[in-house]
Length: 305
Image (tube, rainbow, N blue to C red; front, side, top):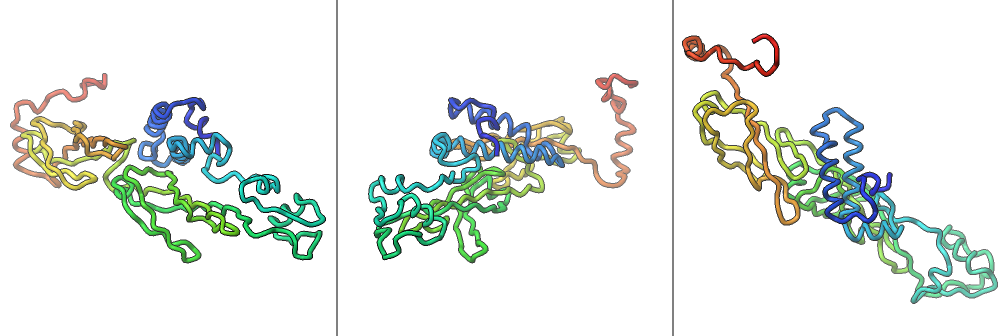
């Protein structure tokens, strides 16, 4: 994976607000809902989301900057060194007639030390942290937006309880501390990283922290105005349609978007006026006798009226 700073187009000295701003700009441009069928944009969106997930987490960002994890959030494996363990508090000590560096390397390769085999060697107390593991999990659109608890069953039968934070997005990586590979000699277990894949919704579309909805309305509702039920990610609310509304008119439901820290985005409702199916004789007669039936609707196109 690319360097997350390069992915977001920010310097390493960028503030948290700079990172957030850069991510939002790229997410609005690359979101799959705005680029249907564009595999390249979808891949870039996932990369941008992963970069934001890493850099927006102070602990992950600090570890990445120190070279402890890579751009995917996985631990950077350095070649084991006898000195790094032996000189640390409680480090394992070696004895015998062979080079301790050789013993250490052979231990990690799974071979027995090739020198003194009389039983001297590692004393009790040697510890090593377990490896991190990575999984993918599909998440429903509403669960990602509102937050949820889900259970993930691994191929070996192990079960992980995963908390999906409100406002989670496609490609986001969740960390389950201590749920990776067990450590050696009583060492700490590694972590499990869960990358979530958010399923699309049949009528909601997300842009950043805002929700967008195409809402069909009848001709009478558009002309005379009405109070109608509108779905949101939290349930149905009542919205007032102003008189004289038209297809393309967009109304805002403040605070009905996706949770974002201490606040929430908005929901934008775009109206689509829908005529009744089939030929309505009464409506046809009305239109034929309507005095303004020849009003101009194509003048802006610049062609013949």
